[in-house]
Image 1: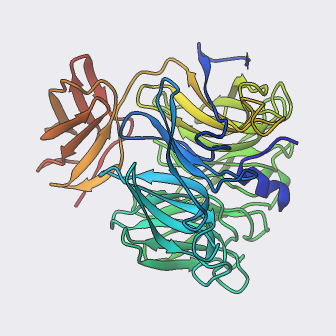
Image 2 (image 1 turned 30 degrees about the vertical axis):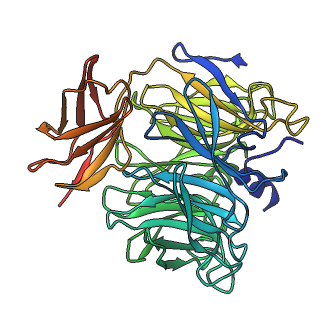
Length: 461
């Protein structure tokens, strides 16, 4: 039996190229073998231009790690958990100053999971330890997100009320935790993905179960804890069941997401939801183009890129795919074992390429016969751009801009307003949000040309 990502495992419990819309190149960048961790569970782009993420370490004598990988494929362990500070990390968030924040599904002082802060290569602080079935929740999941108030927001899979349906919480960077909402099944139960911040300052998320029909929900919650149910899954089989991955806020203002099961063929779906709750089933997977899709990333060409944990040409190994905003899906790669199996998270790097992880496959001598996972790249010919560590701020604040070949940069502007800046490295600039700046796209002029942000920067009042 192939080893699955933790989200797929919970679902079980409760290098050939195919048709492509454009020329693209698949590269197996890293095989996890145990030296820097096993079974990757998340991936982000760091301030150093490399790839950072977590390994959950399950079925190994390990409590999980934070890894760092260069784009050339050199892999390093940045931090190793010892279980007392958390076990099975589920994702990390890097902030403007370079620190990392994240959660672990278990471990900590009471084995209910933890929220941690890490200064890379220097120190770690456990900000909060959950207790199993505690009133503040247990088993935090997904990646934390910063709110405009400077607090971190997240979810727990269990705990909360006596029924243990999970919670939503906020926590300060010094560890003061507030429970915002305890799920009651009616509005959802067992959130298994982190929240996303909307342009309205509210947060959007999903639950794996609960709701009007028991198949999970999509919700909106304010920073004060007022929750609005936007959609309940399960009214019909074509609706999809049990979302487990984060929503994606698209450039058109709508929310896109996936369900790992349900749909016309019970192989999972991709859906779209307006902020007002109007629901559209965009695509039903049918095994040949994949089964059990995970999260989506909208790239600079406007299309979405995603993966399926199973299905495709090799049945149990999974695929990566491209999807238009209207729901037309094209398979880009079928996994086959040595190049990874059971892909999950994808990101777009500021160089333009798509990067992702697989939770198994790769070097089959690691955890034989399944393999311990990989990091891969998929170059589909998209151009470089700039991105933000945090996509909002107030005038006078310093924000971090990510990109490539920043050495020699001459100008940075926020929606046309010039800003003062400092080049930290060839992949990171610290810029001060200038007086008079308005929300909009940011541009950076380098010796090789002008780069524009993939998303508008939001200047807060």
